[in-house]
Amino acid sequence: MARILVVEDNAVNMRLASIMLTRSGHEVLGAENAMDGIRLAQAHRPDVILMDIQLPDLDGFEATRRLKQDAATMSIPIIAVTAHAMRGDESRLKAAGCDGYLAKPYRRAELLEAIGAWLQPAAQSRAGAAIT
Ligand code: MN
Image (cartoon, rainbow, N blue to C red):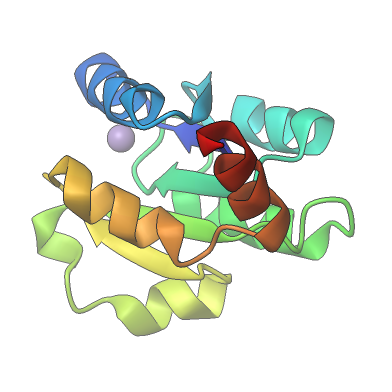
């Protein structure tokens, strides 16, 4: 089990992500805007952050830059969750510090693949412990 922070302002998208992740055994923290997301990341040190790009306060690029500049959160992998129109914008996401990206809409398998690549050994061993 991993702790996943979902930063997403759309209630339907948030609910879908939350259901997919909790059904896969993960703990989900949710933030509806970038500043709440940054605060939750600092307070709870999630294993992975799913970062929507279009948010009501800061955009996901700026939120990612701030998280990657903070020693407390810089090592947390950030997966940008982008609209179809932003496919191909990988270089801008990387420049902001994103570690990966996932295009919306996505299926559960795609979501799990995107986060699985970035789970820390500690999170993976917790998952292994839960199985046995
Ligand atoms: Mn959004």
